Length: 524
Image (cartoon, rainbow, N blue to C red; front, side, top):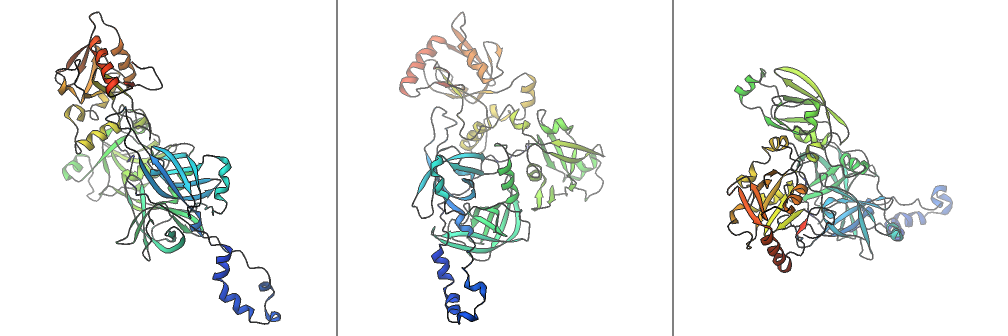
């Protein structure tokens, strides 16, 4: 399935800005003023006897500091949070008390503040919108009485998107006080989930250049910096096109998830089988279509060959010529060409014949998946039951397991994505995993049962985590609960009495809250 990266590691740093004062502007114009003063007043043009025209505001004066404290939950020990961390980045004032910044500042943030460049004042802020796919956040003031915080800030208006070859200007700061500017040239684009522009600076940029600084053209914000490579003076930026999309969306819409996966067509025998006779013909083979996604809704089938997106042909390397970014992978184009809520025209080959379909751009493939994505800062659900930790399977959970196991999953979990369609046919709406076994009198002999899928409780199929929570609480005639798993020992038996005794010990010694299924249900 084509999915976007829910989280890029973007560096953060302190940022300051300074708008030239009237006194500074006068000092900069002083030589010219002295030259005019030496002339007889009668010889001066009438316009020069009037007050000096106001200086054009420096775009560096749009910058503020964004400082945040971030603390997410520990997915593998969901009753507790990770150690708190901090992030500092620059933010760009857009007017109306709104600040645009790197999304890292808002990810699992427990506290956010804005600071003036000279450090003379800080105010508490709150997150208006955060899109983890675009890696952007929009902030505003927590308290309306702090509105004068922006009194001397210069708001920037978002302009037209940059294209390859365009010229622009970097607006930043040295040591957080002195404005610094440098010419930029858009050289290329690349994709790490969403397209990014690479702009070459005509001279070396100051520390912190890659952390939320504005790129200006015709006095407007046309890009925001996301990273800077000093060795080649290359600035990585998010373009005005995606910034405008983020600002115009009504909620955290994210990017489209089209619900199918693609593979390259390099094998000449395979191409012949697909009736692609032209060796230069491009395209990508559709090897999987998710039943719950937009592609299935549009009529795409496994075995189709995707040849063009909105009339943009796919070459034999799987790349398209994007009108703004130049050559991009077809998968990146699918995710970024239009926002959620619109449609894409796709050209296909089916049994050697051309087919056109209209793909609705939505996130059904993720929202209806049995392995869903958690929202940033969302509290993970879990049940610690007699020493057995049960959790719903999420993308975040599988990612945490992969990170701990160095990009591999236990065999009992590796089959999840491949068998998701079969699980759905069985009526499952969610998958439940036994993820941890704590040694207690109730769990003796079950040490090797961890990282297994739960299939049944007392012979009844498990369709969701909520259902599982109710099933293990049901009374049985013999006081035993049988939980069926997808690997040896396949069935484990626990006594309700032993579970309750173990729960009391675990609650007193390690985990005060033994379950969180959602909401604020009472302790069990």
